[in-house]
Length: 306
Image (cartoon, rainbow, N blue to C red; front, side, top):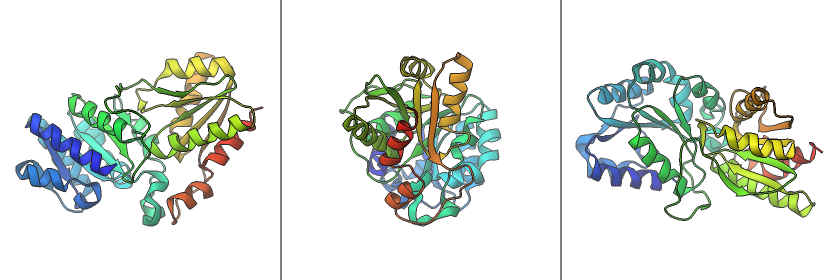
């Protein structure tokens, strides 16, 4: 996924001289080395200083640039939150903050580097676009959408490879979910590469047991596709949310708010890391199973609605 992110930036950089990249000594991890090589005058490495990363990016935006500032999602959200909130968003600037290795994809970086609350934090920023692509095609689209935006974006990015779900050139919009599967018995709403993949597998497990699920790839958490959630939740009366994040404040909370505000009579099960759990060390697969994010656990949550 990071190779797609990097190449898209290189391509955009050739078209728009305002595109620039700001790194916090993680260019190898985020994959932006090719951009630095192609446009060295538009690449800034601030060192291991995440608050400064966002401050510099905000300054560049104030001079008319369109910066992409990248670091691990734990640092992008927790450590640089005040700078992103005030220096970028409150100031009405145009900064794309890229948070990599979200949730359990941090794997062997461990609990200190495992952001399970970044979506909750970012949902509290007024007017911020929050995007979590599910495959390489949607990632390229997300980068292009962010580059075309006049406001701020939080791009939650899994660095590792992800299965291709969409054909090249598939159109994506903020606030418009993608329908991956349609079924009459329940709705599964997923966000991001890991959870969309697991949600699709869970739907197959459920189908083998005679339960047909609608599966939505949300693409953007803010703005959120309220209409699609209301439509399919109303049709079945059963909803499962799937997020690589703590169950508090993120996707599940957003869906609960929508169901309550729209008066939708539907049961909801939230699949995510427990509200009282911190991150741990392990492989991504082990962590997904340990925190009950994997397909069998999603299927079990769905069955509990009946």
